[in-house]
Length: 327
Image (cartoon, rainbow, N blue to C red; front, side, top):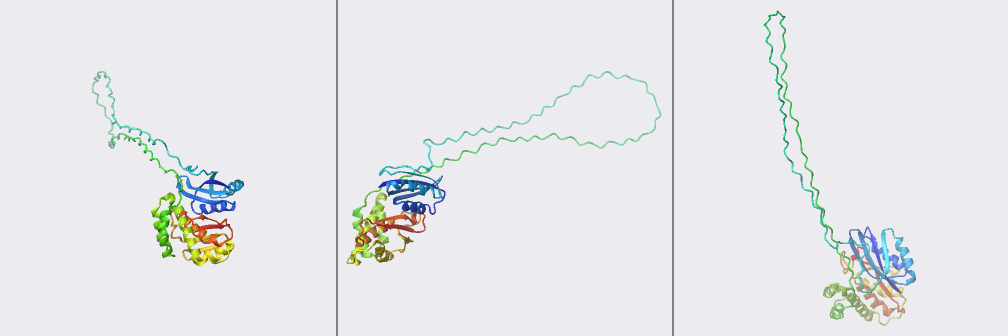
């Protein structure tokens, strides 16, 4: 068995996690954790899966067949090593210095220089004797006065200063949290409230989430779910016989989980609608439901290889939370 880290780039967020998760499940892999992030290049999905090493090429072929995936990268996952997304926008080590704007050219007034034409020295006139000649009277009409010519107008267009360069967009780097173990003290503190207030337990689970660190949130919810599911089994089904996985889900899992949320069983998947723990744009809390079913169904089936993991979650953009169940 190997653990692989899948990084994909897509234009749209809706349905991306569902398609990639289904492709991984179809190739025999189980999902360990996932994270979606919005980037200038598109939607970045990082998913850690676990499965047989011989199926890696089949997984890559299945990812390549997904039309919404622009590009992807599959690499070995190393626990505790933070790896940035291959398609995440890079930031500059030094701030971008905008170009120095070109100084505006000052307009200078136009100075019209008129050239003075010097009159040439005219020769002295010759005086001739006056001779009277009879000539017909000719009526000469005066010419209409001419309008003075207007001097041409000159319009100076100042060069437009270049617009300042836009400020660089700073995108926060993709950071993968290193998961921690459950906060057992916080879980033990809330367990009496869960059993006493059952099935109205979601306010106490939300208080549990707020009381632990983000890195220990999912593991603490998983432990609280396992303890609660085991308590329900001991209370209602301890004297029953061993069942197959499908029989245990239909007879025990769906009725018990249906008392908490709206659930539907399709194939090998449980569809949870309108989960109070997994709100849109928030954190995925499907680990509680996975732990709840482990504690409830584990003692009821004959197999020791019960596997439950989240295929998609409402908090990551899906319309409902989906859990895959296998043994």
